[in-house]
Image (cartoon, rainbow, N blue to C red; front, side, top):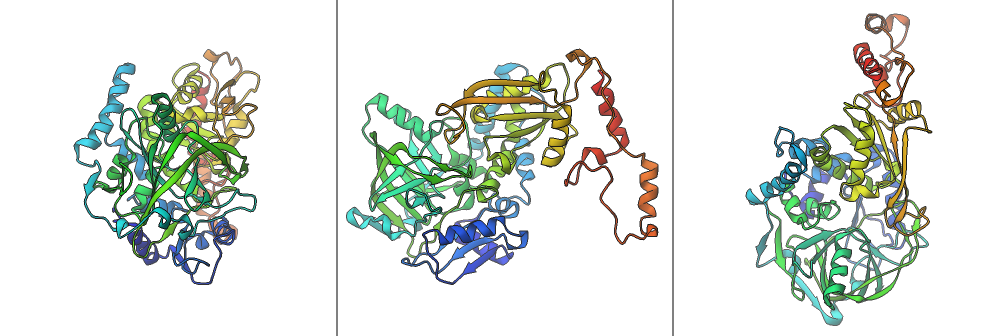
Length: 522
């Protein structure tokens, strides 16, 4: 289902028991963040969206953790579970495999053309709830908003759950991103668009073209699918609102901004309009980031506010990031599921991928593949490093197709057992995330690819690959049938489990184990 706005989403969350209203007075300085952090990391029954209705110094309620579970993230994107995203997107792709790079590129283009052809591009409206109140000049004061300071050493208050809209100064193509913005004063913000992101590319093009102002609109709130779309790592020059329209099943409605030549979501709660001078930079940070560390101070562009428009009684949305797992993990999990079919479009041997919370997106990806030839894992490793923002991944681990990569314990059991560290790794230098503090140079560092598949004779493995330990099916069935007779109250977990997941390879039928063992000795 598509939600018209954030209010509809909040109402649905409350209806299904996924919203906690907090009426006690709270401070936007650290207190809301601490409450949110505890809820994110607490028991599953406590992990709810939080609506703070009594924020000190502000009449606006603050919403946090709205997308902070698999259930809420799926609801926001109109599916029952996040795996449906891959299935739905996969249905748009042709079943036959492309032959050659040319056909692959054509197939990717066909996908986006399909979205345009079914009328899901944005629609312009003349009147919008987000422009019920229009503040200009001195009245466009950022202090009207209950902007959070999340961590003690943060450089100040930051906008976090943003939908930031700009246009390519040469092509005029819209980009939608999610970047944090530090409050400098009542009318200026630090614009933290990182080196590899669309906004930063607009800045570079503006400098080359001699453009002295980049119009920007910062949307807060709206349909949660629209809010999430800014975080999606789409190919260059693809409008994120097109993706949001497909997820919603109907176009995103936009309204023209009042002071900038841009359009913003009509159903947003708040829109901050302004411009960035590409020649102007100021120190930004520190900021307690999703890496779990403070991002140090660095120079970023400055946004000058020209207007703030809002609903009559707006709700201020925010997200808190820090040591995982937090809300951004589930936003990233939605991205992982949605983009799995696009990875398969170029690397059809991929069975599944997992970007676990411990890897904070760019540090680790676990990949299962259908191995078909010698060196296949290395082909996939290099293919992923050449695929868009996957270039930033510091560690790629490749395992066999039957390994459940969604179970990190299982995946690491196989990875650590199957690797000869002197032969089965690729270490190279390349682009890394701008937030990566471990690299000795900014945005450039070492990466590792690990081939944790079963090794074949054709790959130089001259020994016999061992079989996994597994009980015979008749005995397993016999023990299951007699379990209560032994004096146990309930059925136990399958024996020989490699971890807490429900689909451990080691507990699968012996026929699967034998098949993989035979393949290992090819």
